[in-house]
Each structure stands twice: as C-alpha cells, then as structure tokens.
Image (cartoon, rainbow, N blue to C red; front, side, top):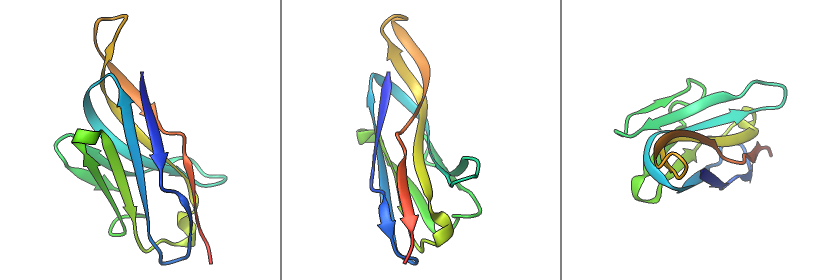
Amino acid sequence: QVQLVESGGGLVQPGGSLRRSCAASGSILSINAMNWYRQAPGKQREVLAAIVSGGSTNYADSVSGRFTISRDNAKNTVYLQMNSLKPEDTAVYYCNVAGIAFDRQWLGGRPFNSWGQGTQVTVSS
C-alpha cells in the first residue's frame, strides 16, 4: 500500500505564490507518473500538471506558464510551484501517483494508483 502526504496549501493573495509538495511512501518499486489535480466547488476534478518517469511534463492550459511541476526521485516526492495565483485558482488540490509497488500477498510487483488527502488553496485579498 502506498500513502501520499501533501503539504503546502493555504491562503494567498492574488498574484502571490505557493509551493505544494506530495511525498509517497510504502513498498514502492517504481513510479511512472505523478500528477496534480484540483477541484473547485461545483466543478469536476481537473488535471493540472503531470510529470512522468523520464521527466517530461504536461500542463493544463489554465495553469501553463504559471505553475511548474517537478519531482525528486530519491524522495518519491512531487512538487507544484504555483505563481501568479488568481482567485479562480481557489480549489482543493490533490496529488496522484501511479507506479508499481511490492505486494506481500502477490510476492511481486503490482500496479498502484494513490491519491493524497487534498488541501485547500484559497486565493483572495
């Protein structure tokens, strides 16, 4: 079982910056993709940014040029640097990690897809 622990949310003024982090722990053998999502009240959860094992990244149009995703493979941690924040960025932010973990019952690697607990980010003056 793989657990994700997020940190770094909170309240920020428009134009400000925040840095989110998400650390994965457990019997991880490899990580394929690390992603950030958000869900605003009354809206569907949307993917914001993704980074794969080779380091390639993708961004939603709504955050491209303002948000940057990065990862520390040694720490199994993914980061989201959020700059030039706008009120419409207010939402609950979630990290998502997919990969292969050791399964004690299977005695081998099994795919996993884990979610963080979610953290509120509020952009307001």
